[in-house]
Length: 108
Image (cartoon, rainbow, N blue to C red; front, side, top):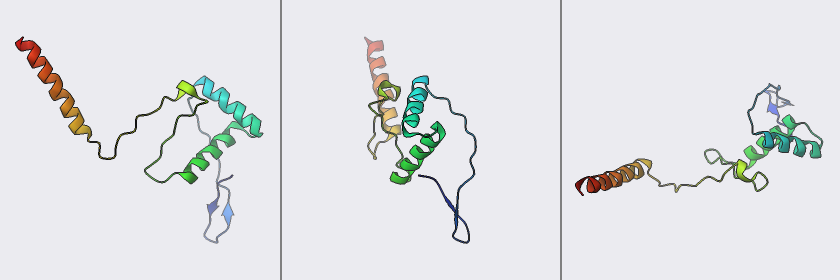
């Protein structure tokens, strides 16, 4: 899979490539190189194809990367919050409860 850019005349052309430096866990780098080698492509092409595949199947504002069993603890699972989650309310409730505990201990 390669990315293409449409021009005014409707012809497609390949976009120019740019260098990018990433800082990744050493084990992830080894895994990525092995997976790319198995497919007979460069690590850059492998990552590019992966990103394009994610973009193809992901809608705007709902982008998530799920942990993969192969990566194990390298990518710990994230807790999903309900859409109606109110951070300010949760924060306030937490500190009100802590303050109540502190006040009760202080009065004892």
